[in-house]
Each structure stands twice: as C-alpha cells, then as structure tokens.
Image (cartoon, rainbow, N blue to C red; front, side):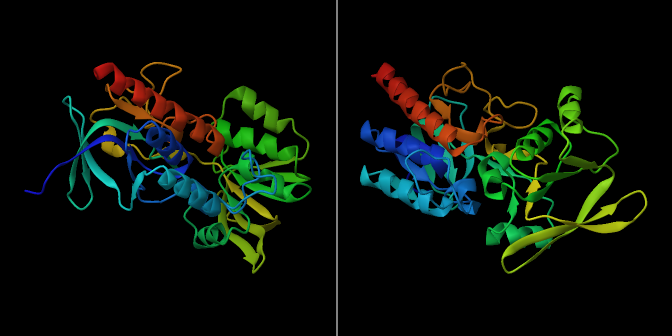
Amino acid sequence: MSEIEKVKCLIIGSGPAGYTAAIYAARADMKPVLYQGMEPGGQLTTTNEVENFPGYPDGVTGPEMMIQLEAQAKRFDTDVRFGFISKVDFSGDVHKCWVEDGKEIHAETVIISTGASAKYLGLESEQHYLKMGGGVSACAVCDGFFYRGQEVVIVGAGDSACEEAHYLSKLCTKVTMLVRKDEFRASKIMAERVKNTKNIEILFNTETVEVLGDDNGVTGARVKNNQTGEEKDIPCTGFFVAIGHKPNTDIFKDYIDLDETGYIKYAQPGTSKTNVPGVFVAGDAADKTYRQAITAAGTGCMAALDAERYLASKE
C-alpha cells in the first residue's frame, strides 16, 4: 500500500478560483497543494481575449492570465500539480481524496474549485471555431463586446439564453435567436422581453446544421427548420451557445449537498462553507448566476480565508 500524504489544504481545480485560493492559502502558511484538474486553467483557457478583468488595461488572453495566476500561486510556494482528483471520502473527520493515479491524500481542509463546463452543440464546425477563438462563445457577457455593431446568432431557449440575447441586442445590430422547439423554456417575463426587442429575430423549430466560416473566423450559420426540413444560411460573425452549463461536481455528490442541476449549495450564505466541515467551495462549481472570472477569484479568496479560520478554530 502506498504511503498516505497528509496536507493542510488541498485545492481541487485551477482557474481564477483555485489559483486565488492558493495565493491566499499559501500566504497564510497553509502550504496548499493544488491539483489542476482535467482542464488546467479552466474555462478561460478557451477564451481568446479577456478585457473585463481589473488590472489589465490592454486586455489579456485567457491562457496568458492563467499562466500568470499559476506563477503567482507558485511564487508563494503553492505545490501546483498536474492531474485530477478522481474520488473523495468526506464521511469522517479526515477528508480523504484520491488522485487518478491512485495516490491517497488526507487533507485537513479541502477547497473545491472544479468549475463548470459550458454545454455545446457538439458540431465539428462549432468546435473548430471555438478552439480557433474565431467567433464561437458560450458567454455573451464575456465576449459580446467584440461583436459590437455586428450581426450574431444565439442558440438557446431558457432564461439565460434570453438574458444573453437581450444583452447582445444592446451591442449588436441584429441578434438571431435559434429555438429548437415551438416555444421558450424561459419564464414568461424573460421571453416577452426578447420578443419585444426590435433587433432580435426569433426562429422557432430551428436547429443548427453547421457553423460557417473561413480562416478569419465565423461568417454565418446554416440552420434547418425541423418541421419543414428547409435549410438556410444566416450571415453572422458571432455564434453564441446558451444551452446551459454542467458543474464538475459528480465526485462529490455522495457527501456534498448539491442542487437539482449539480451546483454545490452553500451551507451558510455569505460564506464558502459546504455542509461538510472543513470543505469549502469557490467559483463556478457553486455559482450559476454570475460565472465571471472576477467573481470566481473573489470566492477563491473567501474559501481560503474560511479554511484558515477553520484550522485556527481547531488549534
């Protein structure tokens, strides 16, 4: 049997939440160990330009920001490790976690910053332009600014899709909204707001066949009416997908209270505490409302401070 590693603070996941938690925990001499997870750096690694994070007057790319945050965490001696936690056991006083290679870690405190993954349509063309950073996005608030004065398409039928379509309508000359069924899933008030916005065109019973583009990025979307089978091309420079997010919390479900969609519930509002003493959450694993890099970083700070206070209370 391999030797068990004992740590004061284990941070599961990177991104703005995990790295900020690491910076604060390291400065508090908690000697944090951080496992970067399946996607080191989180969702921001697929974001080409970040212009709304304070401190970057000229903007910064998502990957560049993650490299800088990682370097800052390491500067204070955070033990940043490649790999991911595949299993946990929070049933006892000791928080047991297992790395995918089988290594067992016993942590006095755990900060969950595993984030959430945006859901996409899964089209080859969509993924191509997403990776290229040339016109596909799952966050209108993050990226809408780059499409001001242009025409865009947004896919989705829920409250968040309506909210993002309305946000884009203030920046873009035209927003075409693709709804798969013959009605919205959104609340009546959100649906009415979209319907009453002049530069939003809603196409019901419509699905995306292909995202069109060239070497410079997206140029349009080929769509199909799923009732008539008719296809047509819609010119656009931005293709937004707003069909939801999936929080990366499956490994915690036997121990941590989750809501109906898998987001971690705060045990005490205004803190980062979960229902398990000594286990805290930061970032998009618990946040289905704001989902911004800056709010994730803020909750990373909260989680580290809460973990520090928890350890102090046990001394």
